[in-house]
Image 1: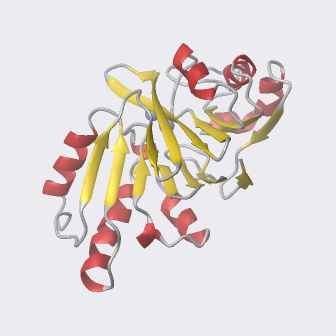
Image 2: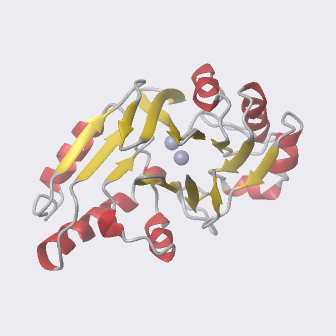
Length: 250
Ligand SMILES: [Zn+2]
Ligand SMILES: [Zn+2]
């Protein structure tokens, strides 16, 4: 399994794209699709017209807005350039309403020559080919259903927190993962609501017994402190600070 970070920042970060990850197994999967991640996907040499599944953690714009550009382009491509596979959009409760409205309302969005399937998930695993996906509800924002994803393929495990505060379900999501990509919005000395700080990330990595911790989803304030060192106070395993276009084998 291969992981590429398309975006390690947040909505209007000056040097990083917002949330987005490319996961390659027997499938090519996207986890979240925040602003500026589409350009990074193209830079990776991935043919966007072959992407058939996108998994969303939740619909804050920093995880979502490049989907609009991507989809408009996909419609155009299917009408005027060449075929593309059907597209399955996977996400938390509210996905059906959101995408249903978009497809009906955004000009041209219902004109694509491919089918769009929308799948709402909560806490039950499923298979895409030989890749097992296990979504899990995490705690991020009141009234908003948010999930993280655990991806198992050929005996290796990647966990992605989405946006979350420290919570029990996150420990299950990350249990003995080879790689855990966690929401490190804030430095430990400047915590903020609804997200983890670097110390929380270290704590989750230790309590869930993960092998490698990747800190990501940095707000600009997180750049001003040594978040790796803050996480290391709690966790003795490998810690990486995520960077856009960083790619690693899980
Ligand atoms: Zn969020
Ligand atoms: Zn976010």
